Length: 456
Image (cartoon, rainbow, N blue to C red; front, side):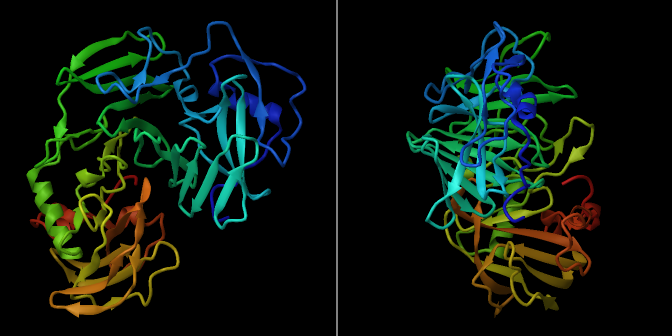
């Protein structure tokens, strides 16, 4: 299968018990005649009646920047929060924790939603159209999906765009939502991509979900009010509520904008040394205007669409989990991520792959000596216009060629370093072979010689 994890269509009565929590914590099936399989020509749906006092609707605040991003009651929140937070989509609400699925049997995408009228779970079917890589709903919701391999864009009739990105388990989860008025929400996921950690908007307001063994135990929001940073935590269940407090933000070096970090980030500040390291790597691998992110942080200019911090995080299991940029770097052609750039590697490699791989455009280079280290493989992902041209101490290999996360307007290449003459290792083997790019060319230390460990 090429698009996503195969969706298994199960009888809708079973589906009701699996997904009923998307509406409320306790529901009753409105009709006993709901056990027929969904029609192959329409989205699957079920209707439920909420138990008295159980239904909750949370309001997004995208206009008043002096208030929290999500309107929450003063009282404690009900358990099952991850099944009840939705964002408006046509005549339905989209549950932001749920994934876009591909129905391989019928060749269509299925998007989970909640009916505003019946409060029932409804799968909006997006069927192929005459246009290549384009799908559209047929139930009057007026949704269109553009299939760009690992990036899916769902556009509603009012112009709101929902961007879905493939995560390590093969599921497509929502990475960002942008409405026609410019309001933008970016979803922040844990290192393995399986857990929605929080939401941030373009102004820096954050919504963070704090997990425990039983699920989300509290929700923390940060925002600016009267020129002061504020934070408040809402408890889920019977825990006491934490009152509003002032909060200090970590700042981006050289910028006045706020840099928002997840609560469990292992690195709390982007330092001057990190900035110097990223600048050096950009000059080594890119053109004059290139910028790099190799110290766990994306470039600040990408804040509207990207998670800013993608380094190590502390997991609920007590272990350190590697982020997407813990042992890797991104190279962009400009500070806003939209520019083009030539792509270079250092001279000195003794072998390289003949052509970019069909998937992800990867080219690998083996170096007996590279920077501080010996016996290193360099892998450059998303290489466009591949060529080998020696230019002094650098070798031009083409141009950056990968779409960037939340929007295809961003262009980047992803670069990793592996111990030994590894070629392109299997995906499962890469975490144990990766080397921190900041240490390959930075000040030499014992850490420079240590390959990556932990989960990625």
